[in-house]
Each structure stands twice: as C-alpha cells, then as structure tokens.
Amino acid sequence: MIDALEQLDSLLTPIRTLQPFPTSCYPTATAVYGIFDTLLQHHSKTYFISDRLSSTIRRGLAFFPPEALQPVLQPLMERMASCFDETGFACYLWIIGKVTSKFGEAAVGPGGDALAGLLGGAFEKVTQVLARRLGEKTAVEMPDGEYRSFLIMWPPWSSPSLCSSVLFPIHAASFFFGPAIKHDSVVLDVDLESLLRLPSQLRPDLSLCLAPLDRAN
Image 1 (cartoon, rainbow, N blue to C red):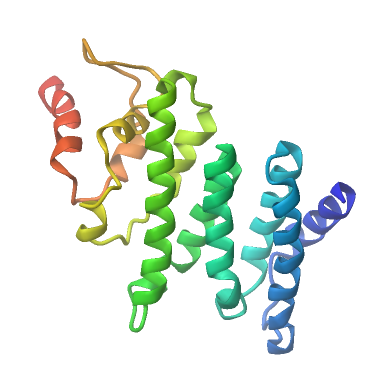
Image 2 (cartoon, helix red, strand yellow; image 1 turned 30 degrees about the vertical axis):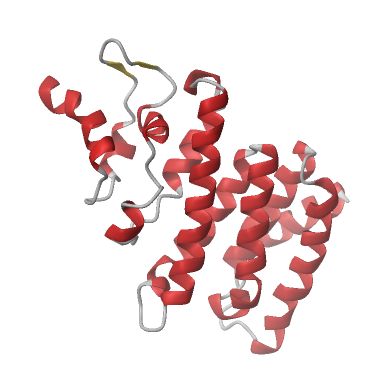
C-alpha cells in the first residue's frame, strides 16, 4: 500500500495537472477519494500511513480542477477534521489548509455561501480541538507542525462573523506566538510572518494578548 501511494505521489509531482483537463476524467477524483477514505477509516491513527495518504491527497488537490473536486469536498473536510480530532496529527490540518487555499476565493464569490459554510465549519471544528488539546498540555509540548499548520490554514477571506465565533478562545492565542510563551512576563517567541497574516477583525480577548507587543514597540 505504501509503495503504491509513493508511486502515485511521484507520478503526480512532476505532472501537477493537465491543461486542458478532460471533463471525462472528473469522476476519477470521486473514485480515488473513495479508496483513500476507506484507508483512513482503518489506518488514520497510524502516523506513517496517514502522512503518506495526506501527501498523495495534496497532489490530487493540485492535479484535479475545482469542478472535479466539488463532490468530495464535504466528505474530505469532515474526514480530515474528525481524524485530527482523534489523532492530533498535523497532516490532517495541512490538508484542510490546502482545501481552504484552493477554494477560498470561490467561497466568497457568487453562490459561495454553502462552500464558505463548509470551509468555515471545518476550520472552527479543528480550532476547538486545538483549544482542547492546549487544555490538556502546554503549548511547548505541542509539536511544531501543529501550531504552524494552524496558522498556515487561516482563511484570509474569512468574514468578521467567522472571526468573532469560537475561532479564538484565549488558549488558541498561544499558537500565534510559537511554543515559547510565559504569561507572567512578556517573553514571546513571535512568528512575525504569521502575525502579519492576522485578519483585520479580531476578538477582544486576542487583541489583549497582542497589546504587550504594541507597548514594546
């Protein structure tokens, strides 16, 4: 199985996509994802398998045009969010971020309400999982890939209503400052690039976390 996934990954990497992409091949995306979904049902908690599957799914997201991927978006996002909830593996966040990047503009276009709800719902669910995990262990114990994947997947198109929801509980603010954070004194390992990507609409509790940086400057 791993050999087959590696071969598929190696095949898709240099090809990337087809121009023009034959519409007759659109159903292939649904058929292939059905196989991947079955594998995830049985092996989502095995890291080396989930990592390889995620890498191949990433290639597929680049290979197929948006129209071919529409039928698999909802099951894919639901599977990635549930797998992350069960395992905490950052590779599942990574795929949600890739989907968000590919379909973000369409979500704010005409008729994109359902798509925006799907992307925003997945983002909100994994944010709740991250907040819960921070309640179970400190930020310094979290693998580097988890909080950086969280930042990378932030949807820049998101609306103020999405920003004002459960997306920013106070615990999740730690992710914007990297793993080194001390609350009794302002000692922050700040990822400046990530801070620049913060949306213009912030919840008050997160704004309070950023206030010490303004005073420092």
